[in-house]
Every structure is written in structure tokens, then in C-alpha cells.
Length: 596
Image 1 (cartoon, one colour):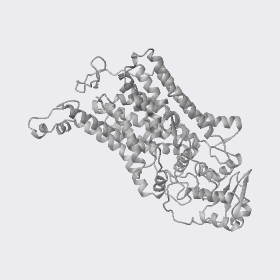
Image 2 (cartoon, rainbow, N blue to C red):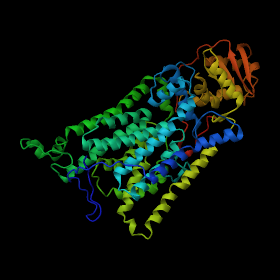
Image 3 (cartoon, rainbow, N blue to C red):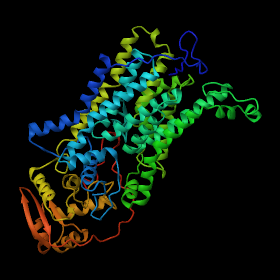
Image 4 (cartoon, rainbow, N blue to C red):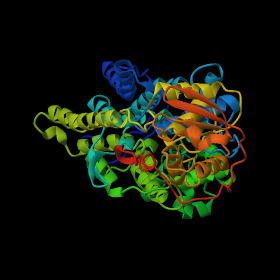
């Protein structure tokens, strides 16, 4: 292999990109006690929400829906995809009663769907990905900091900050922690995002190795494809980092006027045009295998993104979901949140990058800000996703910056460093765990825990052989697809479109006893539902209200299922609607739909 070296220390901070490659024997990078401890801590923290859920089950006898996160709506969406994939091979939108095609493919969902088809509960087939996500993320981040920093305290510090960093900020006028920035927070239910981050980071490391060694050129493209398929935002960032990283190195070589630097061979004398244009000469001198590595990495990463772009254009449910997910987030809140890493990281930009990974590391924060701003416009959605994993490059750059500032001249530098790392990891992590405890606490209209009667009613709907969708209140509608495989009138507001809040209001009106029998029957028939599921908070006499259109009634304690005599097609076209995004940002959820 080749080693591209930076001169640090007595010669100053000047990069030496033209040094020849030095063949060395690769040493096996074994996990030491510190790395094992960090992995164990990462794994334990990833189980925080599961532990809080199990506490409710064991101590208070709650009925848990199997969600693993602060915001059950997202995990219940995954469970719906898994259940539908188990039944049909691909996933459709089960959060509307209109027929929708099964067109969504996601590799991890496909595997979980296969397990569910074999008899594993959907929630368990989803939860099984957590150890995979934790271990792959840890190994990828460790490899990244290992390629970027010297052994010892620099790597250890960067590893801890990359995985556990958290800082307080002002979000919508409240002191809070932006959970999306923390890998620990992402392990609470967003295992696909964590695995995508791991694949993305591993792809950057693999690409840096492949372009130098000319071997395993296929690996970055494969890892990039996995990242894009699991979480497309990571694929977008990866493509941008590869392209920008190469451009930065090329520009640096051109500014130094190096005729045969890190980009390889010299140009023949007969090529006069190339001799007159240094930039063209550098481009012409790039080895063919490096062009192949670039094309494979970008092309492999782009393939799932192309598929998803076509899906959004061709499928109405996906088109409406993208529109519903559009929202904004204050940039200054993010800037404050990452400031403790960003400030020392800026110092590292004084040192020009000598390797691809160094260039990509410097490009990553800038790229994240760029994608964030673009996502806040009509070009994209969910801008916070652009910053997932941002602690990885910032941790590396912050450690570099602190080294360049000569922090060892301080008295007791190791003690000061340890205290600072503790300050920017422990308080925010504790705060996030406490917020999770509050957010998952059982509530009358929550989806994390339901009553035994509601569980028995869902079990009945899962067993009943009559086809048809379910009309129920919003919070229970979230649960219906993943537990029964049936469609629901209202549930996840990214998918129950158009006018998800309006649907929630209508179901509240129906089950809250405010409707007249004639109006209730007309509304229920217009939805096209086959079953009406009354939850334990229903105050209306549904049998009396629905009267002549009910074929049978099955009671399960405080819950009941009403099978209708006829289920006509739902009325009204599936039209576009204004955005109704439920923001998950800032460690709190907008619950206006649930309280509608």
C-alpha cells in the first residue's frame, strides 16, 4: 500500500503531497481495552429507550407496541413496511384506505420482512438490527479516525466525541439538545439511519484506500449503494464528499504547479497543449484506476437515489409524502449546537489536506451546510438529515485544531482535555435520556403503549379473514398497519395524505360523540373502511351511532371492532395537499395532530 504523509512537528504544518509512496506491512488493528469500553458504552446507551419501555412493561404491566424511540410514529412506519413486505414482497402505503402499489424496496426492510414471513414478530425483526447498527457504526467511525489522526489520545478523543458529543442550544425559544446530531440518539429507533451512516463513513475510508492502492475499486460503490438504499440523505452527502474531496486535491495540486504530484504520471513532450495548461496536465496525468474508482463509487451510490427519485415522481403516495415532509429548521440553532466542535475545527483548515480523507473531512461540514440550505427550499426536504454524522468530521478536525494551537503547553493538558470531553458528552446525553423518558411515558393518545383490550382488538383484526381497511383514531391508526397488515384511514401524517390533520379531526369527531347518526354513517361509508375500531377512549355509543350499517360487533374489554355490512370504494380523489410535516427536530415532537 501507499502512505500519504503530512509533516507535523519540527518542520511545521506544511503538507508534503509529493513524497513517494512507502510500502509498509499492514498491521492488524486490534481492539484495545479503550475501544472495547467505548463500544460497550455505545451499545448500552443504544438500549436506553428499550430499557425504559421494558420498565413500563415489567413494573407497571403496560402493553408495549414494540417501538424503540422517542417518536413512535417513525418506528410504526417501519413496522408497516416490514409487515407489508412480508405479505407482498415489497412495501406499499398502508396509511390510506385507497389501494396503493407495492413498489418500495429497501434491503434491511426486505430481510426483516422475510423474518416476519417466517413467523418473527415485526417489532422483533426490526429490533434485531440494533446490534448490527451499533457495531458497524463503531467500527466505521474508529477506522475513520484511525486513518485521520495519530495513535494515542488524538484517536481516542476523536472517537469519543464522534460517538457521544452533545451540546445544548436554543431551539424554537427553548433550551434543548438537537438529538439528530448524535449517533446515540439515532440508535433509538433509527437503526437504518445508523447503518447508512456506518456504510457512508466506511465508503469514504474504502475510497481513500482504493484510489491510492488501486485495489478493491468496487467496495466504495457497494458501500455507497447500501448507504443510499438505507437512508438516501447519506448517499447524497457521500457523493458530494467524494466529488468535492477530489476537486480540493486537484485544485491544491494545480495551485502548487506540481507536474507529477499525487496524481501520477508525467505527460509526454509531444503534448504541447497539455504543457501549456497545468490543470489539463494534472487531469491527463490521473491514473486510469483512479478514474474507475471515482466512477464506481459515485455510480454505485447514485443507483438507489435514481430509483427513489423515479419513485417520488411515479407514485402519488411517495410524492405526497415528500411534500408533507418539507419543513424548515433554524440554522443558527444548529450552529450553536455544534459550536464547541466547530470553533477548534476551524483552526484545522489552516492545514491544506494531503490525503483524500483529509480533504473529505474538511469538505464534510461545508457540504452539510450546503445540503441543509438546499433541503429547506423546493429542491429537497427534511434538512436536519444533512447533519447526521456531522460529529465525525468535526471531532477529527477539532482534535487537529487543538493540536495546532499547542494545547500541550498548558498545565495538566490531559486533565483539562478529559474534563472538556466529559462536559460535552455527559450532560447532553443525560438530558436526552431524560427527554426520552418523558416522551415515551404512557398517555391516553400515545402509540408506545396501548391497553389490553386494544391489543386484543388488533389481534382479532390480524386473524380475521375478511379483507378491508380500518377506521380508528389517529394514535391507534399508527399501530394498525404494522400489527394487522391492514390499511388505516389515518395514522402517520407523512403517508395519510391528503389532509392528515383533517382526517384526525374527523375521527376525533366521530369517536368523541359529536356526530349525529346520519352524519356518522355517511362519513364512515365515504371512507371505504370495512372495520371500525373503537379504542378505549371512545365516548360515543358506536353501535347506536352506526346502527344499520353494522354487520357484527366484537368487544374486547374497553375496545370494540365493528364489521360493516358493505365497504364501498372511498370517495374523493387522491389529490395533492399542503404540507403537514410533524417535526421531529430538537428532541421534541410537534403533537398538534394527536391533540386535534
